[in-house]
Length: 283
Length: 354
Image (cartoon, chains in turn blue, orange):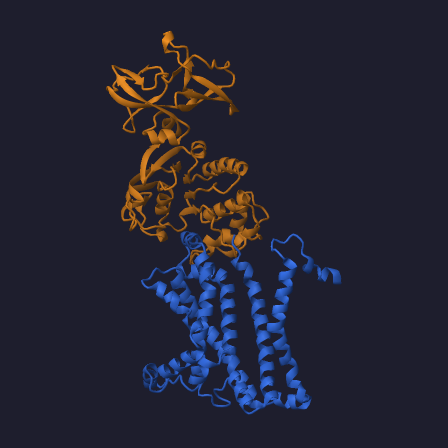
């Protein structure tokens, strides 16, 4: 049993040169840069004793912040699905003028320092900003509340959805649509029955990535969110607040919960994606 | 169902040459027509135009004398099989086949049980019993081919359009599916248009062969006529191995430029002037020349036996020419002979001399 579990380490006949060496390096690398920091996070909060940890976990401000983070990240990722799908479609299929420029612009939120995008969004959507003043006419306010958080998270999460979906759409044989069309399917039927299925796993991946990014996002959100405790305060910000109060156990307690819930939800999303992965297998 | 293509032109921006250059074609009801030609000749383009998949610059397509303007007009009346089958990967074989029926508006759609029954019938017709629950990825090439065919036939179309349907199959499956397809065409009373680049396949399965070259139809004839009277040098070459001998017609006799090739009488009506004689390797003959001084060095090297013919190569000066003799004939005398090409067809400026 132990032998077979360790069999991967011997792996004869692999094309990779220096299999054992590279495996050792990879494992050590992952250990040092991912597992070790994360495991300190698991240990650290309990140092002040179980009691203080439990009380830290019962902090209602923390629970509110966590809820804000997760719900906003989920809503933003969900909103990004139709937007990202549309953009990916236009990039993959449309030959619009300037599509190369649009292609480059899509990735910009990833490269931009998040604070810059945060300040830009806050200026645009603030009560006196170009868009904010326009929206204020209709009585809608997207700054200093949860709508602002969702907006910022949509901004940073969009590239993930687009980049996950676009290659799948690009590789989707056009003949499938033509075949469906010739068999009498109407456009919406082609979309629902032929295109949606192979694209779904990629959409779920995109959702997962955008969601994960949304949970961890800090810089772009804090400028537009207003950061009122219990209302529009996100968990990463609360961690910073706790650190500034020198409340290390409190900060790591939030981080621990954030970590566990993120891991669980990503595992769940991965499971759902694998469930639908058969749909995108080429025939 | 008869199909008529009238003066079809398809231009693409940027290309110097039209993809389809004033193509007209009449396919009577029940015919099995093969579109053949080299790659880029416009066969698939023409087939896609008939199916309505591409927009054409001008021209019209009539189905039973009524014009077809969009794919919608054709839905369910024309079955199309794509070169790589284009099966829906996320659906089972049964769902794939039922697709054309499933997507019909509720009012026209048959009941669930009827659809299931139709799928069963088609699976049986395609010799795919018990495969209904599988996904296309699990099938072999020949099976996918038949699923694609079943899907195209589910709505009961009278016209079947096939784009290189045997392209991806191994030779044995290819041969069996070819004959089977012809039988299917006859039993169901279909009108079939098949695109292929393999002229032998076309000759074997089709009643009529349409040869295309650079977006134009070069010749449209029965396999027999095509063999006897190829319209151009290209058709002659395309239909099988051919050897050409340039020369000149003088006083009713073709005199090849090559001294080792015997002159021969040409049919009446062929005027004097330069011409090209083309002949199939198995139509050539060798014989002792009339006068001894003509005897130069033709040397025939044996190259093995294939399909009932002994293959040789003849050294004609600089050229090497293939030459076939039936196996049951006596061995070829390989030295001191001249070439008799009196069965060749004469072409002038690429066109057959009448």
